[in-house]
Amino acid sequence: MPASMNIPPLPAATPEGQAAMRLLLTRYSVSAKHLREPGPPDEAIWAMGMAALRAPDHEKRIPFRFVVARGEALERLADLFADYGRRHGKAGADLEREREKAMQAPVVVAVIARIDPRDDVVPAHEQWTTVGGAITNAVNALHFMGYGAKMVAGNRATDPAIVAAYCAAGETLVGWIAAGTMDGPAKPRGEVDPGGILKPF
Ligand SMILES: Cc1cc2nc3c(=O)[nH]c(=O)nc-3n(C[C@H](O)[C@H](O)[C@H](O)COP(=O)(O)O)c2cc1C
Image (cartoon, rainbow, N blue to C red; front, top):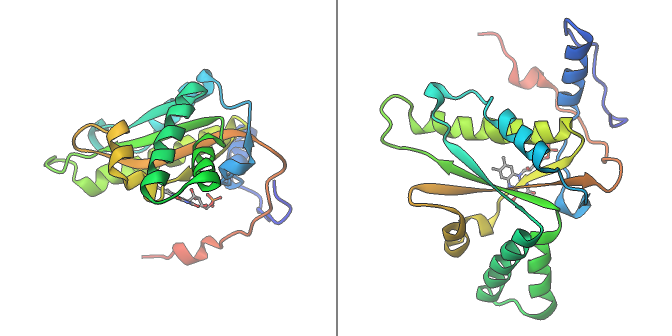
């Protein structure tokens, strides 16, 4: 736990609950430049998917899916990023950096939303909420299993050529979860007092 964390005694009923709460409250994002091999193996990615499927999901619409890249598949993502860079006037070392962006983390999991705006039982905002819950459960699960992770998006996630490489009609590329082993201890970070988001009705 980062030194700056000042977590009060947690009202968990069991030691397992206490441990789970501590892990949850000390989850932090680790950017791709601090992620190394080994990346989460297939079993960990499977468990990440199971955790994502535990997100609250009205009528179990499962309005998301993941596309996992490691090894050679990351080269394909690097090609896409290089193409993006070229189209945005980059060359030489700048273009190489563009490729590296795709290859910094050993595993890159694309998050794809499949929202049905015509669903007359589960409105779009509820489906999007499930996508957010799935991302949160996924990064929490990776943290629980000892891996660093960060959700990123940015301009590349809306680039039509990159979107076309991932999405079918009606799908949205939300972004990518970069995952791997942290290159060192996480930087301590401040806490936000939940008093500001907890008010009696
Ligand atoms: C859908 C989504 C897209 C995001 N895109 C970016 C991004 O492109 N770049 C970035 O630095 N952080 C992005 N973030 C925020 C990070 O994932 C992270 O939450 C933030 O850096 C705060 O760190 P923390 O999770 O440790 O509190 C995004 C978060 C979400 C949910």
